Length: 239
View 1: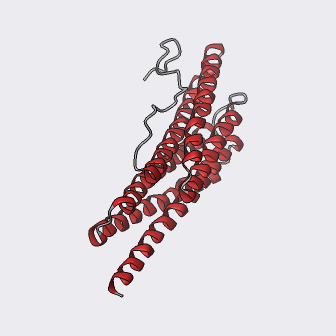
View 2: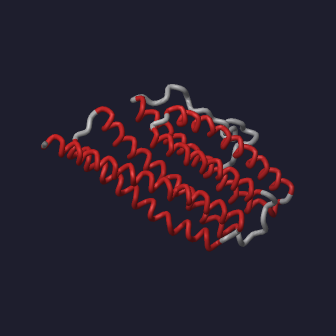
C-alpha cells in the first residue's frame, strides 16, 4: 500500500506539472496573437495588456521549475519519468522566452503607433506571427499526445517562418532605400520580425524536447533553417 501511495502521489505531481505547462502554453499563444494584432491595428491599450500579462507567464515558469526540482529531490524519478521532468523544465524555459519576444513586440507597438505606417508591413508580420502561433499549438498537442511525427512536422515548418522573415527583411531594405524617412520605423519592424523568427526557433526547441521525451534521444538531423540573412553578406543586418 505504501508503494502504491507513493506512485499515486508521484503521478499527481507529474499531472500538476503538465497542467501548468499547458496553462503556460495557452498564455503564450494568446500573447503572440494579441501582440501581433495590437501591432496591425495600432492598439496601444492591447499592447499594454500583453506586456502586463507577461508576469503571469514568468510566474508559471518559476512554479514549474520549483515543482520539478521538488519531484527530482523527493521522488528520484528514473528513465521515462526523469525525461519527462527534465523536458518540462526546458519546455517552460522556451515558452518563457517566446513570451518575452511577444512582450517586446508589444513594447515597440507603442513607439510605432506614433509614426507613419509602413505600407503592408504590420499585416505581413501578423501572418508570420500566426504561423508561429499555429506551430506552438501543434507542438503542445504533440507533447500531450506524445506524437513524434507531429513534432517533426513542426520542426520542418520553421523553414516557412524563416522564408517569411527573409521576404519581410528584403521588403524593409527596399522601403528604407526608397525613402530614408522610413528607416526608423523599418528598424523597429525588423526587430519585431527577427523576434518572431526567434519564436519559431524556440518552438522548434520544444519539438526537439517532445522527440527526446518519447524516444529518449534528441533528433539526429540538423535543424532545417531558411534564414539567409546571417549567411548572405548582401542582405545581412548590421548591428
